[in-house]
Image (cartoon, rainbow, N blue to C red; front, side, top):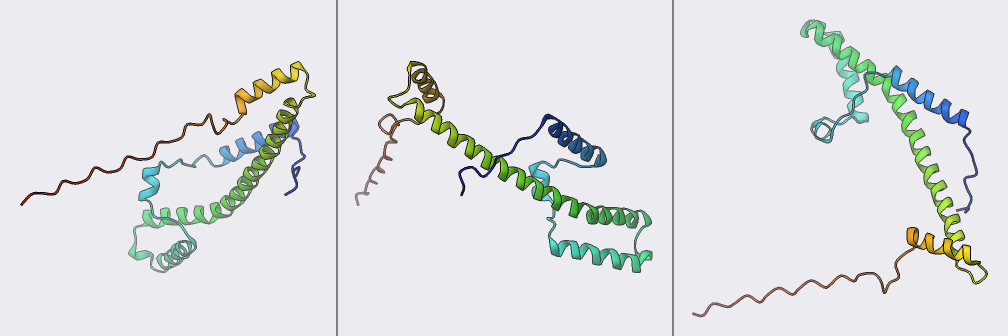
Length: 167
């Protein structure tokens, strides 16, 4: 991969516009919830087959409304309609979130590669005293431990032999 794939900036105005757009999403979707892990584990998961199942069940319930309470049907319709509307929004947001994650990862990798280059230059014989001090500072913050400095784990102790009973 090209070592400099990302070469972009975000103006202050663009950052503010992006945060405003995110705030708008939050305002337009005030009913969004935040499930905890326990709730997620116990909940039925939604997949392509499940969406089809829901759509077919709504169709059947519409054909036989006398079999269900009106409040049940109203809530079922609201939930199914909301699901139909949220799915494409979720796909768009997931796609955007992945691109943001990928771009941040690439920008981070590029910034780190550049930082390692700076560190390498500070360690050269041509570096002046101020650069050597910078090298020491970078080494304290980001340098790796040498293999001889790393603690080596001790091997696990062998299990004690089991005594044999005397008969």
